[in-house]
Amino acid sequence: MGQAKKLKTYSSPKQPVLRSLPRGVVRSRPRAYAEWKALRRWGKLPAWEPQAAGYALRAAREEADMTQARLAERLGISQQAVAQAERVSANPTVDLISRWARACGADFVVELRRRPQVARSGVRPVGENT
Image (spheres, one colour):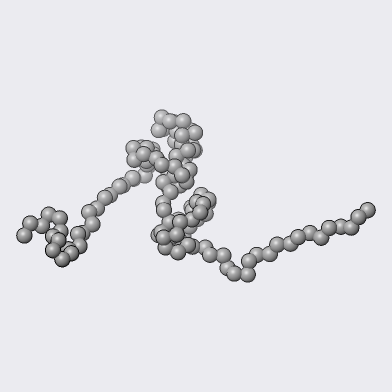
């Protein structure tokens, strides 16, 4: 009954795929959690890549061997709120991160340090009166 159609075939690109983007370049989409977790474990997360708070929270929960439901119970929030906080696009509050860390038996440390002032001609560093 009719001729069989030839199937299209696809091959991988001849050039190697760029695995890490140059400094200052932002990925068009975030990494999947499994990839992020593996790169983090191997110490291969690029320094230029923004840290996803949601992924860090999920990793802490998994390291504590806790389910989302169990953590939600400890935090006094819903399981859906835990799932939402673990997304790459999450923007959790410092209070939630702090309570999350305590519930997972982890430490949460935020440190802001003042950068040393570089003296320019005619300009004194902050706090210098002489």
